[in-house]
Amino acid sequence: GKNHLIVSYTGDSDFLSDSSIQAYNDYGNYVEILLAKEANPQALLKKIVKQAEVYKFELVEPSMHEIFIETVQSLGGDKNE
Image 1 (tube, rainbow, N blue to C red):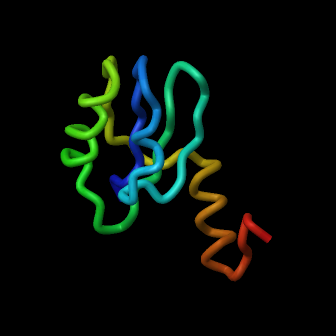
Image 2: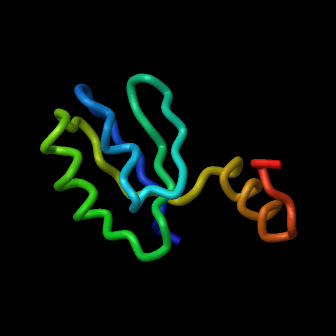
Image 3: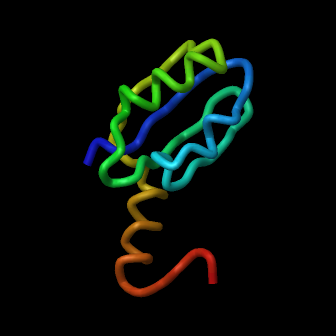
């Protein structure tokens, strides 16, 4: 589903600890975010713009890597083990 975001920004990254974010990968100049199931992307965007300057905010299909991780986790694996 459309619960993956790409956000390119400068400024404070404290928003990454928001409860609407299930997981993220920070690449320095942008971050890939996996939203929690009931999260509202627009509400998260409002929080981000209070702390950082946003250059890109895009809902995207999950990457092949993310699909693999989600599949492994759904089969009983856990990347935290």
